[in-house]
Length: 327
Length: 151
Image 1: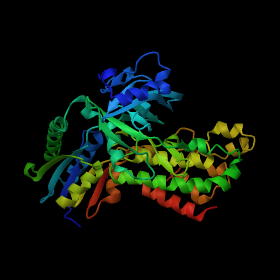
Image 2: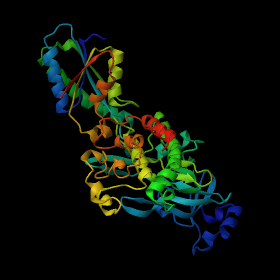
Image 3: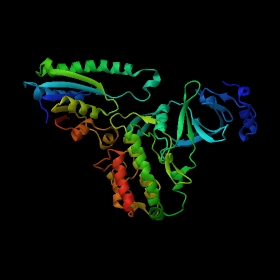
Image 4: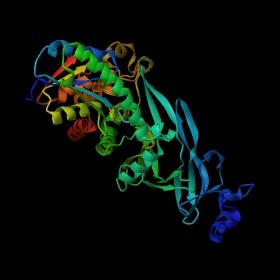
């Protein structure tokens, strides 16, 4: 570990006057080895690539039904030399199973894969940007640019409009932004990579440009015969969520005074999602103004489907045609 | 169309693979001029394999050793059906940056096999979408050959 006294004078000066360190009752520690990331705390400094990153906060993420879990391996930092705010991702190898209906899929947190994806998507407008460097112990630290914006699933709930108003007034613009995001995942697949964790909260909407950008590429899974199926399925799920502005289960229909039993009774077994138990994919039965061409895309992800999308490009092609036609 | 008597049999350690082999043996066992290749394709190691400190060479060595036993068993089944031992070759390989079905089709194309035999275990729609079906992929994408899918 580098001693505090060994820090360059300009960095010590910045630390003295920094709001984070002023509130600390101890001296910041300097970590050039991030192996034990749990030892690194608020107000400490991570030294990588000759840069001094002050830990100012930690990122959070909702997962497995628990909201806002702190991710200690993903600190928010400030580059003390430049004052730039960034996010670091430290090496955390994790293996776990995710369940889809009756199936279990082994998943992995794979820092090396994320580093390679970051390299591939450098300059691509629909992916978060960053670089990977090695710390003193050889850990792959990813230095990420913060996207000035918000998660798409938060953005689409900003207006208090009814679904019908949302559908006619807002959704065409939302899908026009989502479309290149779908294509971007196809770009990854064409280069042999999976996103690995396609979810609606992994798309950020840039405040200034409105551009949608994917974040978090460190998940990976092992599906040798269908390496991209999970990404593809989650793209479909995200599309359905954006279109309905929510997920629908039978109880949601029954609880909604505008829908109720009359609509619930029309839901057939084939209308449910292929893999998410009881989630309704045939959204046209709930919102009859959803055009058939768009609903047909949803139905590719339903239990009743006879035809699957094999590639993201097929989904993109159908969605492009729907967006172009409009409604 | 390639010579149908050049037969590629994709094998693994499942009972459906054995069924495919038995069926193929019954059909071609007594014919002359038949050449059979027993093909075993295994997937790349899972992403966390290397974090245990093992190498790709370790993984391939283990796979090849297991495949040697499997292929020998399959060869014996075929010779039991009447196919001469010299008429049976073997090919064991990893599906590198490809799916298993694409690798089988590569071998079929390069070896100019006119018949491909594969077992079918029967999968649900959801299973097929998520995990794929090798037999379906072969039926959809095979060229210049017939595909025998044995269920």
